[in-house]
Every structure is written in C-alpha cells, then in structure tokens.
Length: 238
Image 1: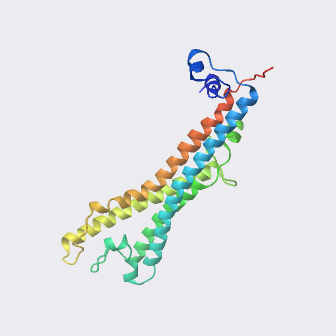
Image 2: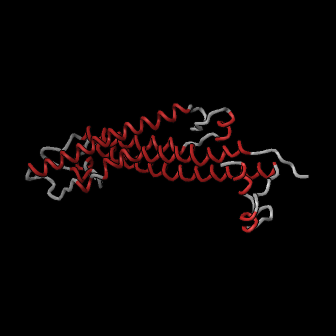
Image 3: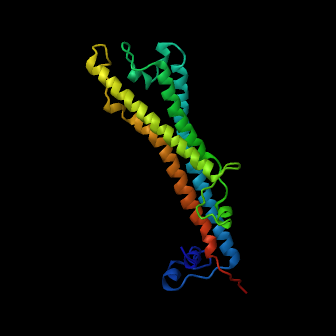
C-alpha cells in the first residue's frame, strides 16, 4: 500500500465521484485528513481484531470449562459419576476398565488447560500496534500489560503442547475402547472409533486456531493499518 492508495481511499470524500477516480489522478489529501483517515482505519482494524479474538478465545475457554467439569466428575471417586457425561460415557468399559479414574482426570485436565490457556492468551487485551511500530518493532506481536511478547508466545506454545498431549491421550483411549470392543463380549458394542476421531483433533486444534486468529489479526490487519502512517506525506491546503 502506498501514499497513492492512501489518497485514493478518500476520493469521494473530497467531492470526486467514480468517474473522477477513473479519469484522473487521486486527490491529494491534507495532512489532517490523512491523520483522520489513518486513525479511522486503525480503530476499525483494532475493533475487528478484538471482536474475533474474543469470539474464538471464548469458544476455546468454554470448551476447556467443559473438561474442567468432566475432570471434577472423574475425580469424584464414584465410578458411575466419573464415567458419566457425553464424552466419558462413550469410552466406558466395566471389566477390564478402559483406564483408571485418575488417568481420566489427568486427561481431562490436560485438555482443559490447553483450551483455557490458549483462549486466555487470545482474548487478553493487546497494546496498540502503533506504539510497537514507533519502538521499531515490526513484528508487532502485542502483549497485555505486564506480559512480554515471549510470555504470550510461551503461553500459546505450552497450550499447544498440552493440546497435543491430550490428542495423543484421547487417541489412545479410542484405540483402547476399540480393542475392548473386539476382544470382550461385555464391551460397548455400539462404539464407533471413527465417530470419535473429532475429539483428539479438537484438543490440538483449539490452541492452533486461537494462535492463528491472534497472529493473523494482530500481525496482519492491525499492523498493516498502523503501517499506513509511514506513507503519510506533508501537505497543507491554502
């Protein structure tokens, strides 16, 4: 994007119509008009980034809270309660058990930590991209007050690692349940391993999606809007 593109952005605002834009050069904007335009674009980019980060982050946190609740059931000590719920019930097997309730609790907490951690990192308010550009930080990976860029990146990395661990754990659980189905007459005869493959995929996808949304919005939309300031030119109308 160049200064010419910046001038053309407000061709109509200065009284030029579509024919004017097509037949001649874009109008030269006053410095104050450029400042107002860039501020408007920055504010709009920041607003859109904040909305979508909150949407995906909230969905990830809600997904994590479900597993927190599931972990509480698994840690209750009651086998019936531990294996209740839409997901746990799919993998229940009485003798031999699919896994111990302690292992089930750990698996739930792993999935919950991954989803909640990524959601919080995505939602957390970010510093203005302009401030980072002024400081010479072209990377513009913003951080919340008190957080360094490395800390936020580390939060996403840890969440992704935990999500991968949960993915492996649930994949093992699916394989274990399928094995019990084939070798034990008391197994869940209605268990469909392929129908449950979404679960391990979702565990590793939640942190990845949050990271992608944050990066694409903060380092893409918001930063590009802030960089328009570099293309401003000095011009005062008489």
